[in-house]
Image (tube, rainbow, N blue to C red; front, side, top):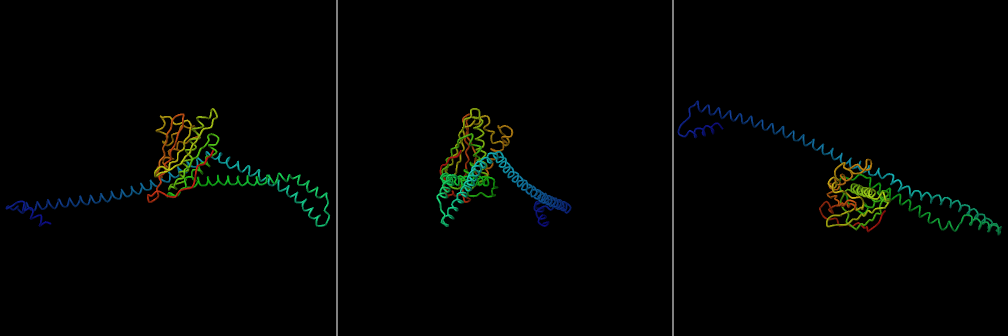
Length: 363
């Protein structure tokens, strides 16, 4: 390196030759420059090393913070779901209590009927024993006819099948409510699953039924649509929030005159997405509040009736699933919310499997 520098320095002087002292000074300056350069390079490398370590630590901390935020978000979603179910708990208990009551009434009737049949059976055995001993008398036949009249045999034979049907209907109704609550309350898996949207909608209607039935007539039109990849628990929570909000909006508009409102729930496929709409003829949303309804903790409901989180969480849930939540509203006329869910598989292809379901009604 020094030889190369020496040749370059001598070349710069042309025909002239620097003195030995001058040459030594020049070479010393070059050496100092190289040493300073080496020092700067080492400092730069050390700075880069420290910066890289700091960035690594910061990235690790950001990952931990992001994981904590995800856990907090999941906890918030579950807390909102439990809050919604808690608000509906009395209604759900009533929904279960009603079929349980007529199951109980039917069972009491069956127990009484069994006692009557047992008495009639005793009379039949007496006659059978008399016939076997050759002691059959007209009195025994009259006693049998009297026993049949006492237990109202014709009435029992007519009503017993109905009692069994009422019992089975009640049990099926309770089982349906419990199944809907179980599916609604389950925690979603990390990955989306192929979901029958009609089943998801009907389960949510079952959970919200008692909240709606005294306030509104519910019209449900579910067109056959393909199954979709989504988080069904989150979708159910979104639909429940919207149905409860519709009930509250109708109650706010009609509670003074006692009129029932109307909720229309429809589902259809539009291009490569499924659209679920929930329309009510409640109080509507004023223009001044439309830009704020998705704000966390913003609510126009009285204290204890709304947390201001339902719509904010619902929109967050839909965006996380690749869908959207939007609305149209006119004050004192009503509001329609639109839940849009993309029809895509993991490979990006539209799902082809149709779920078999037609129009139905609830309320």
